[in-house]
Amino acid sequence: MQSFEQTIELRTDDAVDLLHYLEQYTRGQPKQLVRSCQHMTDGIGYATAKALLQEHFGNEHVIASAYMDKIFAWPAIKSEDGKALQAYSLFLRGCHNAMKDVYNLSDLNTSANMVSVIKKLPYKLRQVASEGM
Image (cartoon, rainbow, N blue to C red; front, side, top):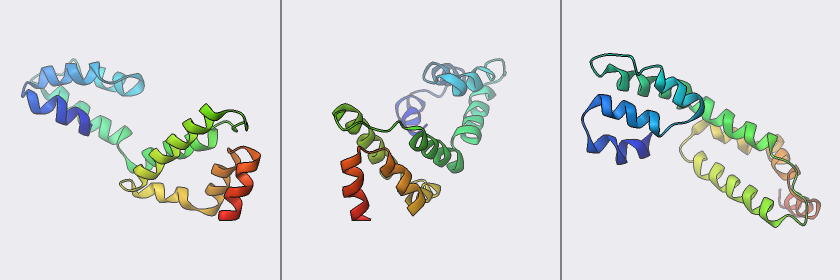
């Protein structure tokens, strides 16, 4: 939403246009939620859509849960799969960056969750990571 507000919302005051742009720049369930506001009159659809997106997808508990679900669902990385290791590394960096703003992501920092993170690594890296704990 911050990106949308900075690139689109600051450039137009027309709520109808903003609602159309918001629909254009969302996908999946958020897009369906925005679409449900298209019929609203007097430009209130945009404000309603933003409020609904915040309620359903901007909640810190939802964000933290999505990160944790993605970590737990991540497949184990084979020792010869450098691309998968790099993808996991970048994802974990994203988690680390998000932890600075999303308080509930500090739950990732428990020893039980760290074990889950480490179990995704190739066997030799698991040993090195476990020794560092």
